[in-house]
Image (cartoon, rainbow, N blue to C red; front, side, top):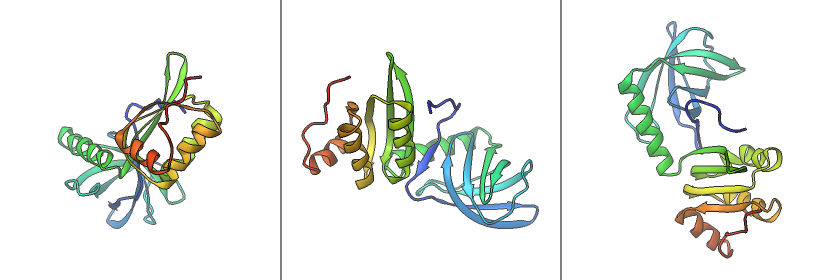
Length: 197
């Protein structure tokens, strides 16, 4: 599960809408995840894989991002696509991602090997949309540390995942943000510092 991608993907707590068009057909869908190089989205519109389509979207109040993309895969109504973007479009995407992470409406989860330890790093929202990846990291990858210094928002599911990590998996909280500290204290917990295994 270690992140091998050139660009990290962000996931959304609430998927933003996307407008699409290909060969004179138009429709809309929902963004599942986004990176600087591409996106994954759900749409009832049938797109031709291997062909370019137009897409436009805004990420939680960002300026409108309007650019072509190449459909590279699909399973049912879920499509993967690579952007065909220039430097201005890439800058708009980068700013939209940064804004969504900062307000906690989007999340990045990655796993790193640090000094022989597997550490899970979460930035942005620590919420329900990370449940599957978070549990995979705990139960299958063998994460022993959490870096939550980039967490900007946390919901009840995110807090429950951290409680599970601490109590059942004995994961160390290597770093944590003030946002996380407030949620942890609000749950009646003492400082989450646990000795590194």
